[in-house]
Length: 366
Ligand SMILES: Cc1ncc(COP(=O)(O)O)c(C=O)c1O
Image (cartoon, rainbow, N blue to C red; front, side, top):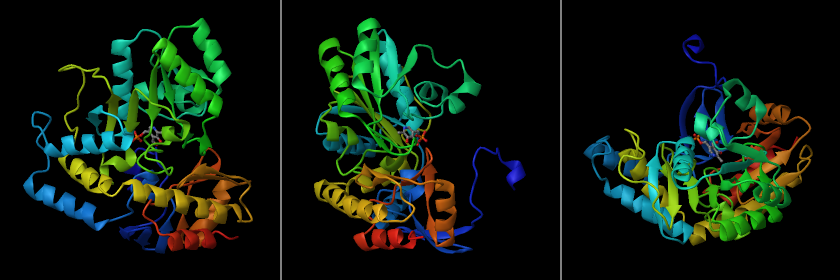
């Protein structure tokens, strides 16, 4: 079968029967899932409310196209604005990268100048989103990418100096960098970005595709730094396991009719699953994520192989001398782990219980 598929993914030698919560039943036994479909399942696998919402919607219709207004689109947009605590207008997409494409087009339509991103940022693999994604290995074969996108070291001084010498239209922030191994934004960079936004009207984009929706113990990760982005992009968990993304434009309305679009977006089933998922992501749920995250990080920090454990909430990176070796040993002990940026990256279901997370950490004691 592999010969029929583009070899872009290296899949595990597992055949999956079913999945529920943080467990996956396979032909090689039952595994604990340490990364929830790459941070896509906030409530874990097969959450009953989400399955019910998908089934009920599918029984009515599966796809109509963007000529029809789906009331669930308004509901999800409202849930997102409520999480952000600010009015916002949502453009829905089918993925995270596409949400960032929408952000890029909104910026290009409204402001002249360079688009700044930072070393270590990941924003997707389509040509536009790749243009603001760091990593020579990922970018090089596809250059030239979108012109006018530049990378700076992730510190405030570098940003202010650059903005003093160049016209900057927008700044892309990934406040907790996920794909480069879970690294937190430096306070100075948040302050500098805020200053440029206030004084120069530079548009601030917070990519919350991985760090949003309660994952870091706040509704959105930028909130740890007191930012107020002009654009918030979401993806991954927003569709409750089905493909959905959104660019939330806070307090402005960049697009007119025909400016942007996609045949599939927003998919009715994804909206139903997203609405059912977001209904659970309230203040109490998010406070629990923060509490469970602290206990889980403490447990991980006590593991013999863990060099440094960093993160917020249930978005955690653990340095190791050989992260792939840790992943292999974890597999043998029935735990599925993900390696990102040379570290082990934990993105478990936000609904995992304290006991489940403790068991997961315990199995990694080698
Ligand atoms: C921060 C961030 N932005 C954008 C993306 C791209 O999202 P997608 O894979 O849905 O296109 C990802 C995916 O890992 C991400 O983590």
